[in-house]
Length: 149
Image (cartoon, rainbow, N blue to C red; front, side, top):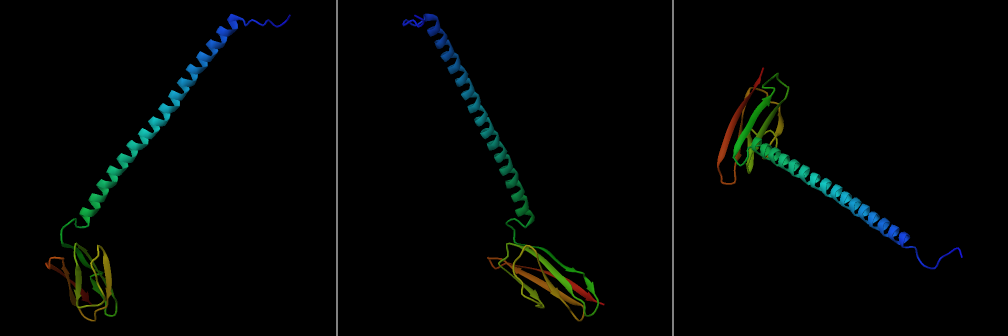
């Protein structure tokens, strides 16, 4: 007969070697894929931590440039400081940690802001006073003169 009912022991050994080598290759491939996923996730985490630290440093610098926790009039200026009769100028101010702001003589509504400008059209040279008040009731003032030529 062409087919022998008894299995060939050499064939059985070849199958075992094939299965063992295939299993080893599969385990190695799975280990490599797992390492690739872990290393990419780890690198992403390091990048996110670096970005967060940079953002935190930038935020701290921004807060400090805006006056930090100090109560202050950071800026008060006229643009342009001199005008011709009938023209207008912008009065711009910047305050930090103020609860209220007033401008005398009053030309338009003002409020606490890091940067805010109001337009004025004085008929003669005028000195404007900006007064800021904090939550504790302390006040600070600044003056600017718009010269009318």
